[in-house]
Amino acid sequence: GDAGDADSAIEDSDLMVGTDSNGDEKRSIIVLDPSQFPLPVTSQVHSASIGLYVENSIMNAGVPSSWVTISAHPILTSGYTSLGTTWNEISNGNQWGAPGMQAGVDYGVATGNFTIMASVVFEGWVWLDLSHSGLDLTSAHEFVLIVTGPAYLDIAHSQDTNISHRPVILVNYTHVDQVTISPGSGASTDADNTIQYVYSMYDPNGSLVSGAVEWSSTSGSINSNGLFTPD
Picture 1 (cartoon, rainbow, N blue to C red):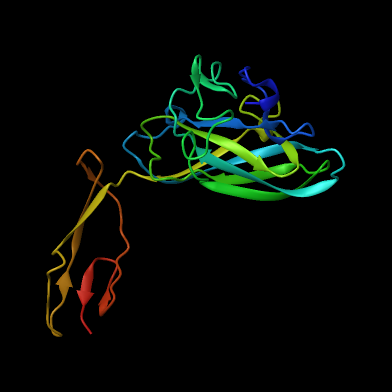
Picture 2 (cartoon, helix red, strand yellow):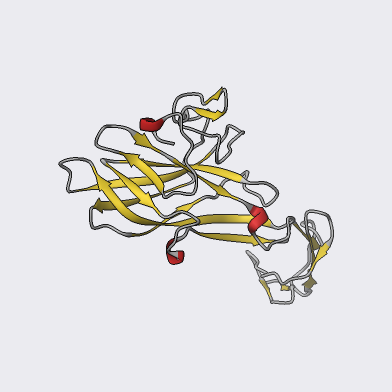
């Protein structure tokens, strides 16, 4: 969205984020869409991040260079559409909490930020953490990009003609939702006897999952097969 063109939706163009010389702020929305990932929907997300390529930095008049910070914030208000969402409205007839979104109402605290020394010659990648407690692979997740500082950034979008500049998403995930260990926490032994621990791993549907674990102990020692030896 653009405060200088507050009633227009912009799609399939570079992401413009920051403030121009007229004082008009620009913010852009990005969408993490799990349907485009070749992963089982039962996978558990540990973390996610996005790489964005800044193709141009447009500095405010009279500012040759300055530190600027770009941040990503999860959108809290539902209803975003690529052709219907504007600076003023989440959808036709439905206003944001404030023009351009209201902090704490329409978007949450930053999941990640990145600071650069912006200038007319700056070009390159910035990486933003997208991890938060509600992140999963069952639905799309929208984030708003916000820049603070005397400039706005021209960032390549997903359909950019330069394929090497298109956004890159990294997702760390696992199929495991629960691990059980036997015997449990009440097991005890004396100095002359070992304990053999075994484990089972389950996905969110309760089905067994194969895989290895790393064993550790705060006393005695435990080997890679789960055999505990007391001190």
